[in-house]
Length: 249
Image (tube, rainbow, N blue to C red; front, side, top):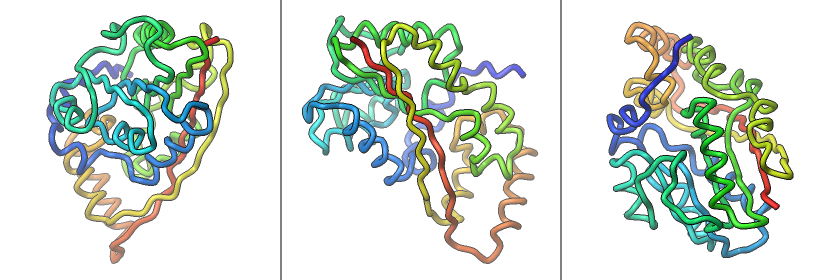
């Protein structure tokens, strides 16, 4: 399957509606903070949030005492992130920072947007900008996690797309061979939101894998979703993610 995509174009198009139709739930973001606290000893560590989007994860990191710098390729999203923290427009494979600048780098549900070649370059850049004993924290989905994705039930093509986009965990570990210690953590979060929120997200292609679907595929999936949850206002789902924690000695 050919899944080459200009994701910058997608995020520029979704623009100012990102926080309404794409942003992860609050308890999902809180789970990331929990992982950071577990693996980062300093309460005032300097964090580079790579692929920071509109800065909502970075904002929560700052609320927990961390110094945060954001980096994202999207001009529209960086303009929003700059209202919350120090942030720069730039590319993960050529980062505009000095060597040994950060205690922590985070990559939160963004590596699937990089080709295998660009992921390797990005990981080399992360290694460069991290201080000794620095840590890279990646939030991603294993191929097993993808099978639990809510959208896969109603838009089955998204599972096929995501299996190509997301590197499975063993592949990811190989790509992180420069790092001396790698840990894996699996998490499961229960999320509840209104049916109307889901419908708005689907209609506006609020997840990047929807940018590969035709209008017909979206319409058919929405119809199936509405039939499944007829008469329900609030819907619960389980979100599964895998965290890869890689340390630089």
